Image (cartoon, helix red, strand yellow):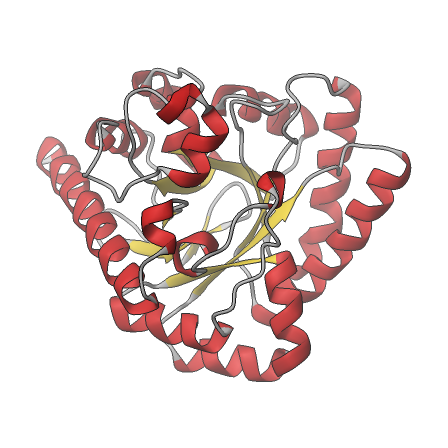
Length: 310
């Protein structure tokens, strides 16, 4: 892996095999996000998920804070790190931090969670920590976002991990372009964007507009598929229960990938499958179905990129 201008290691290049990462929810089983009443705690042992991800062909794996805290207390850091070292999973992703821009009790809770994430990042050699800007729309003071991101990046920097800022259509930062503006304003060298195709589609962002984002400012990309319009007309229901493996929906993920590869991006590709269908799959099936769909799409996009550059 090589270093980028954003201070985050790149996990692949157009001339090497792509690094596909199993996002937390892809392998977590019957787990729902807290925003929809879930506990965010998987009944599947973290050891089993590491084994299944590696067997399917993944080169990275994601852990969510509440779930990792539970299994951390059971197994301890040395054992989890050993399982990762013995697997083919070279890239570790941690999630998810909000309220790093807030005040009062919300900020205190976020800071406590950050301290835990920093400890885990150091112990596991995490590549990046995913962070967001809540689910209540654009109602956060800009100066607090700027100062909060700068402070967050400074605290995480000693671990060697990067901050992956994920814009979402229901958040204070809705689009990748808005996220990039904040990163540049905060002058945070170890921050980059996490660009999720589901959020891009639901925010109404034109794929072609992504070509203007510097590739070195993209930490990771998440791939998934879905219907053209949100199921039941509800963005939360759609995003939590009706995502689909890449290539089985209507998102034109190939055009999304073409636009991102044109930026020079050469990092990690995650696949975050939150859906009723995926939660019902066995662990080996979930790993196989999602990895096969994602790697097929990424390899096809890389081949197109090579052909254009030949």
